[in-house]
Length: 113
Image 1 (cartoon, rainbow, N blue to C red):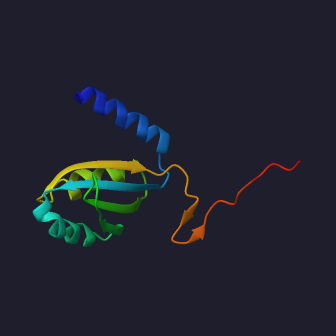
Image 2 (cartoon, helix red, strand yellow):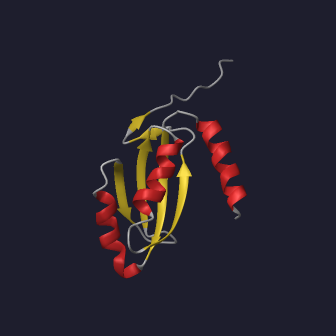
């Protein structure tokens, strides 16, 4: 992806999310022998809520919330990318939360007949 394409995506994401809070689920691909060290380092970052060492295509799953999209971007560049052993990241931004930590966030709204 070219630098212009990245800047275009950043502009779209910033305008879409603006100053709204962003919840992100971040998948980390790491060197297998460094997985526990990476998970520990990520766990030490104050803003991080949850860290899971998992099986499958992803090695570590991180959940965190940010004040806005720019804070998420800074987190990825300044905090995650500098950790030794991190090979790749995939960031999923939450659009709607239906249930979190056992608490229903959105009631099922069925139309009345």
